[in-house]
Amino acid sequence: MLMSSSDKAAKLYYGPSSFRVLRPGTHVYCAVSGEAIALAELHYWSAERQEAYASCEIATRRLLNLDPA
Image (tube, rainbow, N blue to C red; front, side, top):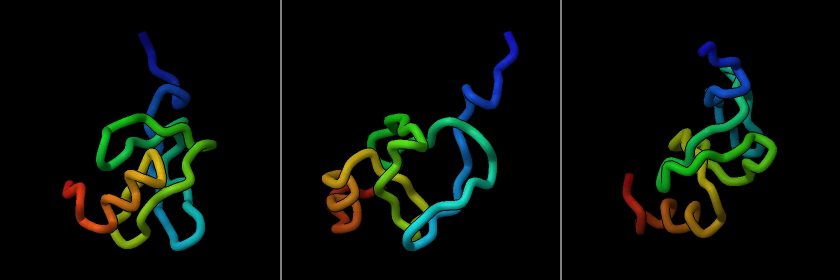
């Protein structure tokens, strides 16, 4: 079975207030939980660490080093 780009994870460059798509796809994975995050639902990331987060709680815990990678 062939996979389309709609089935693949995107590769993003995370900036301070937006992200840029480097490789098309429909989702990225949370750096802490591994949960798939649809690009339309991606609101939390770290530009410094180049990581995406599934929720504000996960992002806060990661940024406070309570959830090391």
